[in-house]
Length: 150
Ligand SMILES: Nc1ncnc2c1ncn2[C@@H]1O[C@H](COP(=O)(O)OP(=O)(O)OP(=O)(O)O)[C@@H](O)[C@H]1O
Ligand SMILES: [Mg+2]
Image 1 (cartoon, protein in one colour):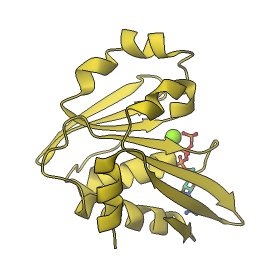
Image 2 (image 1 turned 90 degrees about the vertical axis):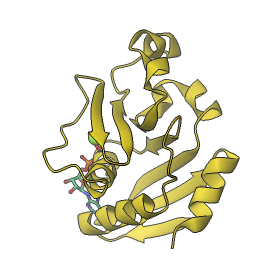
Image 3 (image 1 turned 90 degrees about the horizontal axis):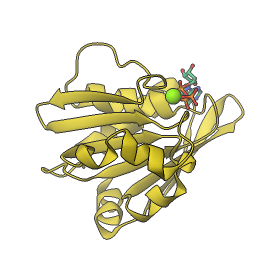
Image 4 (image 1 turned 180 degrees about the horizontal axis):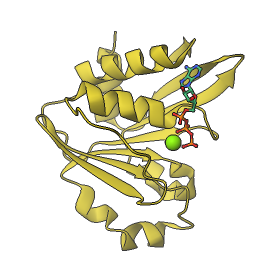
């Protein structure tokens, strides 16, 4: 699935559509947010976390690595691997304990092995003043979810 997102509002609207197709149980669901600096990864994550009922700010996890949210529909972990150098560091930060909720991962390319156990990959890229997004299902669960987006 490929879409043109003309502005920030379009990225947020996509996050809202994504919210609408999330399964009842978010446990172990992993969404990779790929794209260069400023591509809109955090904008999508923020839109999704807010669409799931979070009212306050959604700070960037660049320094904390993980920002957890307890929301009515389940736990969400907003993860930023920009400062991570290997999959070992990922284990060290407690990645395996984040399996009771939805993991939204910016800069997943820092730990390429993640793609093996992830469900969905959103790839954002610059296109003029807007962005292109490509959405790929990496697991059967992920593919089903994408098929429901409309
Ligand atoms: N579809 C879009 N079209 C144009 N601008 C957008 C779009 N989506 C988001 N933006 C803008 O892009 C800027 C950077 O967004 P954001 O912080 O989400 O990027 P990021 O990919 O998380 O960057 P980083 O790699 O630094 O974490 C923001 O100013 C945001 O408003
Ligand atoms: Mg970001």
